[in-house]
Length: 70
Image (cartoon, rainbow, N blue to C red):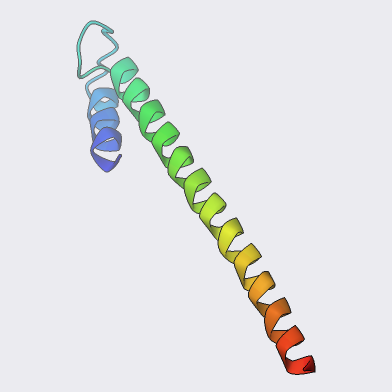
């Protein structure tokens, strides 16, 4: 992702807007878009794991509380 941002910076500095050039602003934006989609996918994955862990923690706490009653 950082390389993509560097590529975008270079394309902007060079005023490279030729979409047929792989070093153009348009290509850099497309690459950045793909990187952002990947980050969103990873965040969703982490969020799902966090939810499962929190649910498990709540169940374990309930079980611990029940065990203390007996």
